[in-house]
Length: 167
Image (spheres, rainbow, N blue to C red):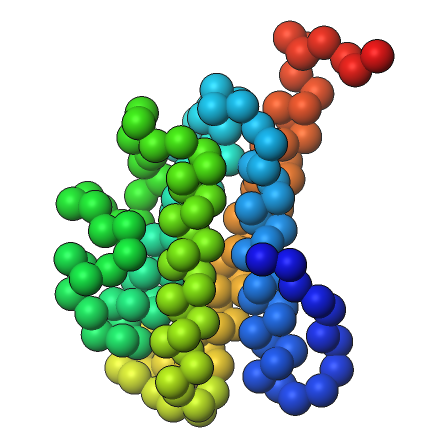
């Protein structure tokens, strides 16, 4: 999704635009990578370009589909019978499919968020009472952090010694 820049105006439009910009920034850190590079482990954790996007799709489902919409896990987009919070990507998942999964989950999040006012609240067992505003801002924070991780991984992948420089 191409996002235009909204830097002034109504609060909701600014927040939603910033979230979309961070979603796109995260995708861009992995776009165009080979399947092997998307899975390359350059840090001790399971953090790879593809796993960051997989994790972000799970965050979308957890916060918007599960928490705000109250859907059962089996009703969520991209539901798989595993821990939603992990960075685990199976061997048969392709980068393009994981990006599509994240984009689909993001679109569903937009639709769910539109049903609520920024000041609407719900009780969360871990965070206490949270508003839709808080949720949107938390997702901005989450995706910006992971886009930064992705930027560093992409820099390492693109500069890896085994790669031949472009002529």
